[in-house]
Figure 1 (cartoon, rainbow, N blue to C red):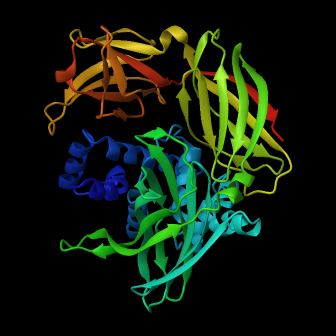
Figure 2 (cartoon, helix red, strand yellow):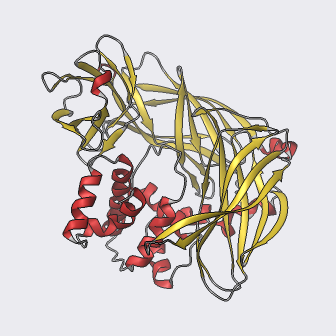
Figure 3 (cartoon, rainbow, N blue to C red):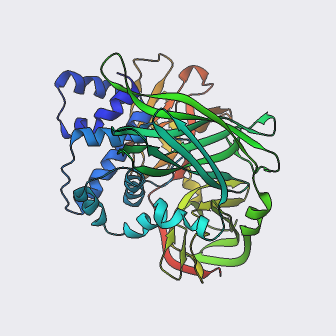
Length: 478
């Protein structure tokens, strides 16, 4: 079974509803596939939301599978740093905002505590249309007809990090279109192809005569690293219609058909006027640890908070729970962060579509460890941890049946323990594992290539841990 097929069966796998042979196949696959393991953990998070709110969802397996197909066909390029009930809730809403859902399912979603402001923020009609109303969206207004569809590229919002493209699909046929989306390739600025990642939401079940809207986000990157770009030349990108189609083995798969090459002349001046830099220069003191918040740059597609930590802190700050909050109570969540030397940057959802009067930076905790506990050393020969946090313990070494060169170091550890896939040996040699890290509820498996190692003692770096320092803070930005 391929990964896409495995993912569609994971919900039933969790419920124990699969034939034993298929269940065993999936169990074997999960031993070595980190991507499917992550998918399984995500589904578990959804289950926790459902169970935690004591809401019973009787969703037909066909509906479940269509939703899972929608997840699987989003190009996942961002590293999700914070996995919890809120993130899972956002994911659920992201799945249904462009889908055709029953009143019962809509009622279920509306009963999840705290979901209303998330729905408001990401729903196309409720929020993204404010880009049009407030003259923030640059019109495109290009229409194409293709195989019974009218596809309307309505407009875009752009800055030096992302382009968000708004489009709609109208069903011109007399039959329900099960799933459609517009996907993109060959993104160029001028005549030079530029590395980008793109994320597209699939539209489920478009009824005859119905029009549904969706968005695609293009994120610019360079060799996997953050890089701002200048959009003063024509942007071209090939557009494809991606659809669910029957294959010869009676299963469903996604096929792409070329539609057009879009030429986008970005109105740079329009979007530069919307970008605002706010100098903050405030200190946050949490349990004796100092964090300096320097500034925030609010752009059309995201907000970037720049901060640093005091070098004299006794603890290493690993993660934060930064949010933006406006005077209407809307909250804008973190989208991840990155570090350059002593300065850190946190990406947050942009509040630019909302007509707020006051804006605050809020939070209440940081994940932190003592500075002498930010790493741990595994002795492969002795099969033990010889230095590190006391809650991390050696469990076993496992080998992968599918790749002879892959070895897994399994450790028992608290939930929310994350480890960098860049590691060193005791002699200072650096390794960058493309195999990654498998996460479980009470353990992690660090996958490495033993043939590359020049020492039996390996040093791993923590990038998150369960210990926190706590104190609420609120800084007014506007």
